[in-house]
Image (cartoon, rainbow, N blue to C red; front, side):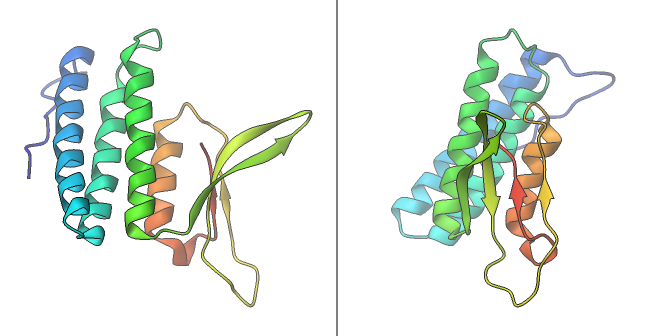
Length: 150
């Protein structure tokens, strides 16, 4: 397993933080792809999920004007989609009607139930917390009937 970057004292340097977490994300994503090619889908799914989290962390301290921010976000979404596909997670991208438009969302289902279940909706698309909540909801569905965030 690759070594996770460390912060040291104080706030991390955005450049070093991005490079370290992005490298770990890329390395774990490559391992996931190798597992996927070998037919080890459960292992691949777990690694894609970890790579997704590492790319979220890479993006975290980049300034909003930094051109790498969008790429890190896209890498996170790619790895999350691979996690869902490999792990067989019941998640789908949906559009939530909002006024005259719609908002992109991710719906994670707990499957058919005989009674209503609680659900969670997050609208803060710029928040790392909302992105992580989708990942955690996909892993712990018994307590969460759905997660809708982009």
